[in-house]
Amino acid sequence: MLLTAVAAQAQVITHMAKENTKVERGEKPGSDDDRLSRQEMDVQLDSTAMYYQLVDSAQVRIQAQDWAGAENYIRRAIATEPHNNTNSLLLTNLGTLQRFQGKLDDAIKNYTLALDMTPNAVILLLNRAAVYMQTGNMDAAKKDFEKARELDEKEEESRYSLGMLAMDQGDYDKAEAYFNEIRKVNPKSEYANEGLGMMFKEKGDYAKGVVYLSEAIKQNEYNVTLLGNRADCYLVLKQLNNASNDIQTALKQAPDDGSLYLLRAKLNKMRFNYDDMHRDIDLAIKYGVDEETAKQIAK
Image (cartoon, rainbow, N blue to C red):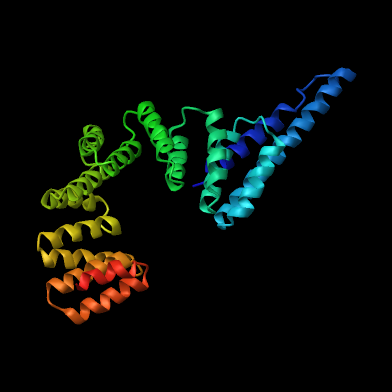
């Protein structure tokens, strides 16, 4: 959840700051220089209090899913105390809020500023890499994933993503090596099983694809992507009842997913249910599948 750590810290730091302003019992009032120092401290305390009030306000906006409002409060907090070490976390949250709003260039900029403050923050590298992928900058994404992988020998997401990028380039050996790195640390990893399942499916080894996708589904039984890909494998293997079960389960989770209707159209064609096939082709088109691609099923 965004800003949870900052909001919790706000109460502690503000309380500590107030405690530090107390005059010990028996201490005499100081000189003019002492009073000046106290005035400077009060200004700093006011600034700190304002900083965390703004952070708390951002938290309220986040809970209300008011991304623009939350972004405004975070910007104001950073402007109030530009040298506060907590700004790395605020910049991270700011980048994530901008990502939610589709402001991808701004998100990259703020993730980068946060990384300037905390260059070895793995979660930040993963966040920036994900946005780079959204913008199509795969080389930059790969660099961030590689650095995250180097920093944390147990981190799974970076290895999964590097494996998928290797698959996109047709380098299945490298992809398999990345996925197996995950399995060495976590033999039951959903990331590893999903990656290997997708890889074997893409290579045309549908039986192995089913094995690994099934292992991933054991940990995430309602994952629409996993169910759809396993159903596709089942169709090729002519295990029609299994395919039907996966498609039905997936459609309960995502009734507006056009690709699932396309799979069901293939299933109905294989069962010679042509009226149902045409109905599903129309539904696939309705829910976003390219019309020409969808109508290829009927040919």
